[in-house]
Length: 89
Image (cartoon, rainbow, N blue to C red; front, side):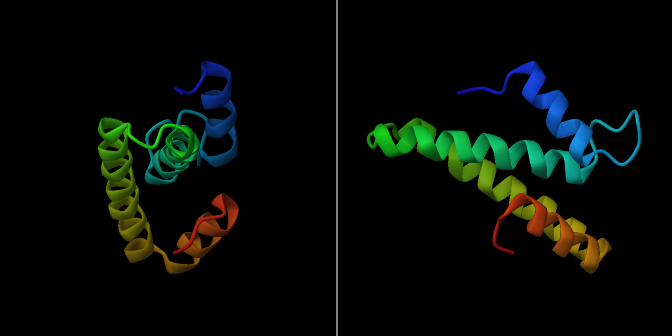
């Protein structure tokens, strides 16, 4: 269920703004989106895993607040990011 180091590096390469960027809001949103997708897949086959369901809701809330920050900072950048990630805004 967790992300492998190689997959994290791939996400970093696609979304970081400069070479040493590992914690910008865009990178965090991309990582959270990947974790949310994996956890959603897990919950499809394990419907009664309520603790994971709660974790999923917390991750969605965290991603939502980060996206709100990005949207407030730069609307066009926000639109590009949600388009690249394939999520609704």
